[in-house]
Image: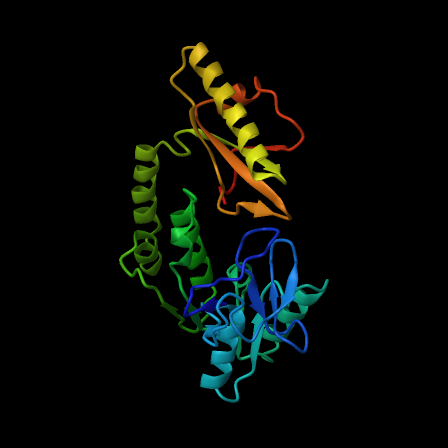
Length: 293
């Protein structure tokens, strides 16, 4: 939700991330935090300036499903995302209906990208294909290329030809160009050169430290202590690496009421330096993290 007059965006008070519109939660439209599960009833007017121009923004699966039903009248449309696939047998039921031809159009998230082998599936469309490119993670381009390549592979897997339509605001972005051309080698060569220049894996290793605390200032004080201690130990040993970045607020700055601070170490053996520092129970250590979000 976004107010077109004052720019108000409803944030979860526990996690400080935008709450999503969940129109199927109950009789009344609800806002839901997908990190902690907190819900609240959707207001008719902007809670900040009382404007009536407080409306949905962005394209979620519910919105795409509604558009598909409107454009393809009479088509049997189903939605497959984390909200509709909560039951134990939800995935199996959806696959069975797809295999039986009981569904004409399925709208979903990344759940659709892998594992489906449907002879009658000939067309795949990707909405906002570039949305993942802006995430603050060095693997953002790689994940975008992988996702597009995987979901494109669902179309035309047997004797019927397939087509893939990619909607994007960045048609010249290298991951999107490479995925559209099935050019995995070209993508690899460009991405590995970037990783080498930037000093990211596989040319280095990473350790991510996350500190969580209910009080923002106390969290910063402890995170600063650890970052300072790491730098002193590194310099005392006469080493130029690892790089020590932070402390900074991570992409999701607060979860379940606790503020988060992040320190990132980048080098050949960053874990060895972390082992020399005193860390309490509120610290989480992730060696070679799969994600920096």
